[in-house]
Length: 379
Ligand SMILES: [Zn+2]
Image (cartoon, rainbow, N blue to C red; front, top):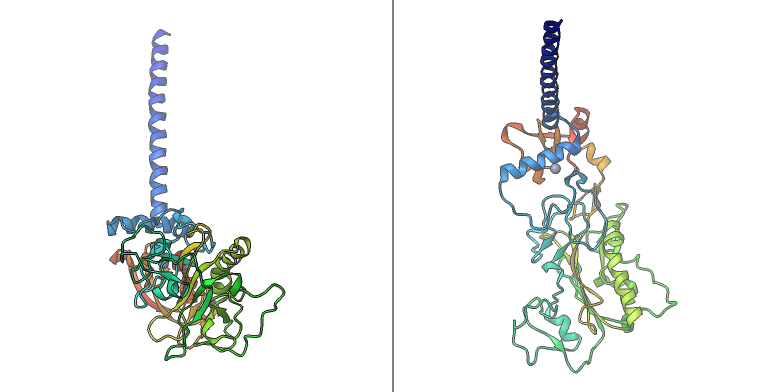
């Protein structure tokens, strides 16, 4: 009996040890299955996280200041027009030092990037026409972010508090394109209340194409300038630029002026790539004068795009996602994750060679084969 008990207890001991080992084995197995699933799954959210990890491992640099503030699994599609400087997606840092027409920032799902860290800087002429002076200032003496250092690096100040409200529209260039529109805006430049906006349909801005959903986009909003059919103030713009991009800032300035009676130095400048007739985007710079930029202060580049559509900036033809699906073009496939990208996507550039496949196909052919569009470049 005693022996049996001993035997039994010893058996029990063994069986406890055995179940512990089995449990550990199951946990290890589950972990392995989990890791395997993470490596091979086609779940786009997971594969995006994975591609991100791989691209960081392979590129090995920690550039990209200010990026990665958001949850990377949410990807792009963040078209909110908030004023935070967070960056969605890869590719741009969310700020550019200067706008170079040979190297413009790429649209990444957010309708603007800041310029010069969002500190306003205007051409000298903008200050000069408003009655500012450089007298008594040493050029470049102030890099203090006060917003009164011009693009040319001169430091301006108001002369005897005398301010000249005005609007100025550059003449069209040789290609018939709008250049900059700027002014010192205030109640003086705005339409009187009760005024109706006039007809602008006779203006055909450069690159205008019919039936492509283009809008005549004011460089300086009618509500700020009382300008109607002024060809120097109207560009070919997408609804996304006009309505989602520029309008919130224009309304901010309008409300500020009505509420304070103050003035705002204001510049709106279409930026073209080479000889294209339609602007890739519009730089908007504004700074309130009487309160030294406390009320209004921004320097941004707004994208003239329609998310999901391709635009020919020479002739104004817009190709929607549906049409693009029918046209063969180049894609890069990550054969391991099954995700496909536009060749320009950062995600495409970071794919390991052995997993990388370049194809010419229609989008539909790829999705029919089970490939998944990248969440960043949204091919
Ligand atoms: Zn991509």
